Length: 128
Image 1 (cartoon, rainbow, N blue to C red):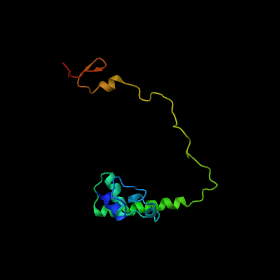
Image 2 (cartoon, rainbow, N blue to C red):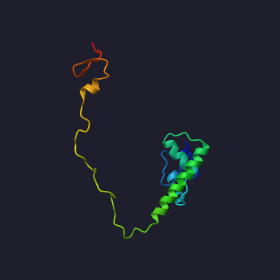
Image 3 (tube, helix red, strand yellow):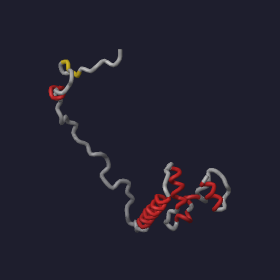
Image 4 (cartoon, one colour):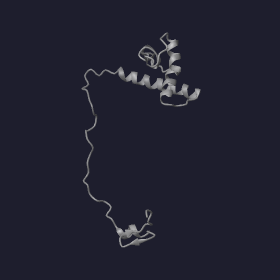
């Protein structure tokens, strides 16, 4: 189990499930440098049941590190005088009048029917 190996590397007991607050990919001391390492990528890939190549792991680690760094830049913004917001647009879904826009035309609908009876489609019987 890779989780047990991570726990052993960090000097923690070999237990399952590991305490990710102290070890594994959620170690706040590791995450404070805003870098996602390969072990974190492998852990998330295992949880998502993804089979990643070594190149994909390296690429994903770099991409995720860039995302975390960008989010950190956002957290540095001064929001002292900004009122908390739950929704930035008008709440609710705009509604429209419920009107028929495509009037049914039985003759046009039945024009290509292989068989019809009046204004109805005739279909083969499937249940005896």
